[in-house]
Length: 348
Image (tube, rainbow, N blue to C red; front, side, top):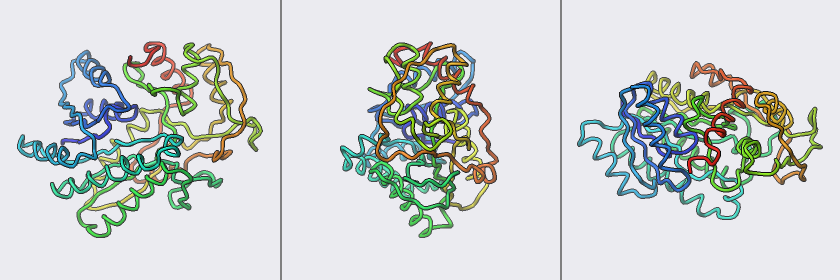
């Protein structure tokens, strides 16, 4: 089975790619490398070569807004007698703060890019899709754990683009429900790294998320961790979020492929998280305990748009995908730190 993996060189995409290749899938990575490194592909190949695994991997530098190049990718696969069977679509922009500054760019890349992809898939009769959505679509809801059927109310352009795409899936599916098989996976907070340390998270510039910021403080790249509020209505005063090991998240995508292959037609929106809420201070404490590193931090005022508690109800993923997260917070800390120690400057 041939899988087209858009955004396959990013943090999430690279881990999915590695698992797909280990399972024997033929993987075609399509990426513009705007927010990722070509070194990721070399790392994946080196890891598989060292394990003496035979694999089928091809990489194409392509922006999903380029409809002509997308057509060529699908057409060339057919000419090679290796048509694309399923698409895992991760390519897009994901910074909440950046989306507030440049919303039109986010609508262009995320929504128009996805539209191009869907048009091309339809033209070449490829109807199976796994999509990377986001818990950001739930907005400021303080209902926890968050379920897939609760109110969708994003408060930033990034989240709004994800909702627009999910709406596009609904319209498409209901117009041709006997053809399409779609799983839209709503990520919470993927963290950690591959246990080998060969691939991991390497954000460009100042990290937007807690965990890569924390590991960069631990390695000495940053002086201290910023904590946004210690006066939330939680047990220790810090915000509570759902953090899921990146390998657990990646395995959720493989389970989604199995689910699509076992159905004639479907459209599902599914949370992928740990199902557990961890506070910022709890993360710091566990990281210090697991690694022996002391994490200096400073308390900043709360950020606009933050909520005190946010974590997933993952019962739907357990039921439909037969999937459950297997890795602990300690494993997240150990694997994330292993990656950072082996790659103090990331992929550079």
